[in-house]
Length: 320
Image 1 (cartoon, rainbow, N blue to C red):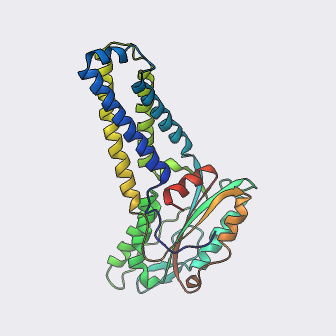
Image 2 (cartoon, one colour):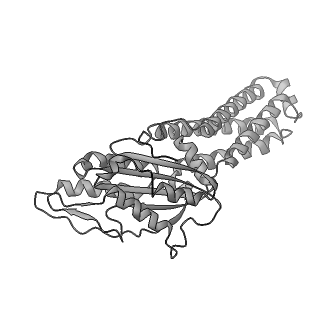
Image 3 (cartoon, rainbow, N blue to C red):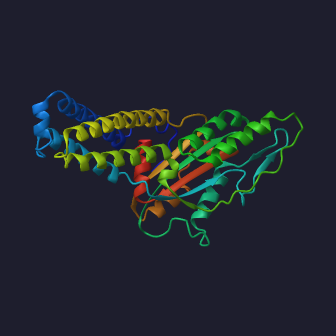
C-alpha cells in the first residue's frame, strides 16, 4: 500500500489469458468434432448416439471450465470519484498567462480525504467490510501539463471515463487559444462518489464475456443432445466453431488494448487489496506517505475506484 510511479496495465491478466486458452481449446475441440462428423460416417453415427463419447466429454469439460472462469470474474459495482481543478467544490488556482486552472497534489489529496468523511454522501465507502481501492494520480508542474495531458487521456481511455477524456480536450483547447485570450469558465462536475459497475469501466471485456458465455452454454446444451440427426449436429457445431473463432479474435483485441497500459508524465498509483476495515487503509493512502515530488507540484487530477470483490478484478486487469 505505497505510492508507485510506473507504467500500469502493460500485462496479460492471468484470468483473461486462461479464459482465452479455454476458448481456443474449445474451438479446436469443435473443429475436431466437426471433422469427424463430416468425414467419418460410422464414427459420426456413434457420436450421435453415444453421449459419453470422449470427444463430447472433452467439449463438456472445456465448456464447464469456461463458464466457471467467467463466473469468477466479478464485474460488479464500485464507487468512483474524480478530483480535478475543474471539479465543483474545488478552489483552484488560476494562471492568467495560459488560462489554466491549477490544483496542487497535496490539496487534491485533502479533497479525496474529505470526500471519504462526507456523511452526506451515501455512495462513499464506509464500514469495516472488505473494502479495497485503486487510486490513480497525475501530478506535475503546470508547465508540464501539455505532456501530462496525454497521461490523463490514457486514464480516460483505459477506464472508459469520459470525464478524463474531456479534461484532456479542455487542456488542448485552452493552449490552442491566442495569447491573452481567457477561457470560458469550467462547467462544474459533482465531486461526490458515484456507484458504477466494473462493466462500465471495461465494456469491451464485458461484451466478450457475455458473448462467450452465451455461445458456450449453447454448445454444452447441444453436446448433451447428440442423439439428434447427424446433419443438424454438423450444421450447429460448424456454426459454433466459427463463433468461437470470432470470440478468440475479440479476446486478442482486448488483450492487445490493455497491454498498452497507462504510462506517461506524472503518473502515480496506489492499490489497496480488499481487506477487512479497508476504508481505514484507503484513508491512510490519501493522507500520508506521499511522494516527495508532490510537495511542489501545482497541477493534479486524482481518480479513485473503491469497492469489494470487483476491486480484485480491477487489480487483476492492472496486474497490481
